Image (cartoon, rainbow, N blue to C red; front, side, top):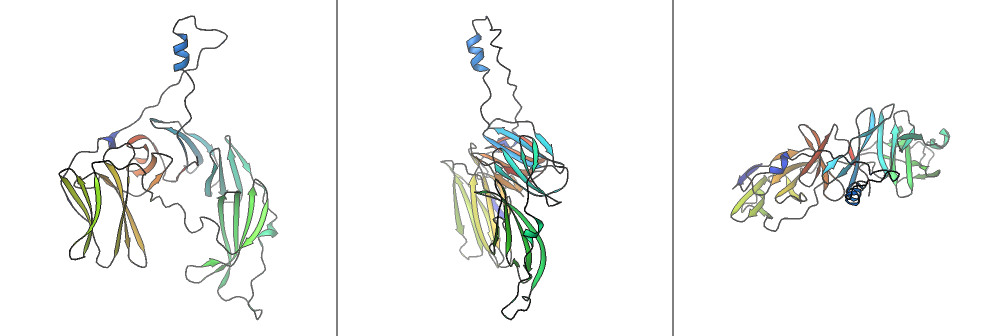
Length: 333
């Protein structure tokens, strides 16, 4: 990657941090404050507003939940899970669900784990598939693949009794059991949601483009490179990628409440594999601020990304705090 640029300002927000706030309890109604300032104090001491976002992460020993506001990040509430977790997900804003290494599925709500009932073990068993002549289907092997998914109608656990061991593979038929809020069992050849497309952490922020900054894709005259040009007044820069033997695509998103910061996603298609890179940019600077390995957007202008110090939680350009792992999920609104 080559960069040709004229610089136009620094990324001051990158050093931004946030400190917590203390909310005092209002005076007891049994002992009213005789001070004439009491009404004003009562108004100022009202309960804190609802958080703008909520996130969770697995720190290896517990699932931790943290509320976030545009200017601060609450302390973590961590609930030990007792054994390794294979998968976990938000169910709604108040509940999380986890698939344990033992095969148990448990719901986390109000700081407590509730193990979900599963159908009898025989439910997961299926007869060995046979072809029209009654012979075992070629390429099928017994499988212990399992997948947890949250769908519109509840929490589902899926198991694959027989796997097709050709090319990318596939399940002959999934046995799906809804475990919450009520039990339901079905057999379906379709893969359960999210089985092949787990969260990759290659999101783009969704802020608004500054009026004075413009980004344009431009191929070179000889067709050997593709450039993403940045223009801001008299300042210009170009992020260039070679297109010889590879298909290149640029996507980008603007960091909310930041006048000139954006993230570029470069996809390089080598036919058999697609490699993706993320770069945090400051409009028309001569080089990326840094490369990003993981970025997940939350509601509004909330987002998280990896950093040498950990995983940074941000609202727009403001750093709210750091969490210890990149296994971070935002709660649904």
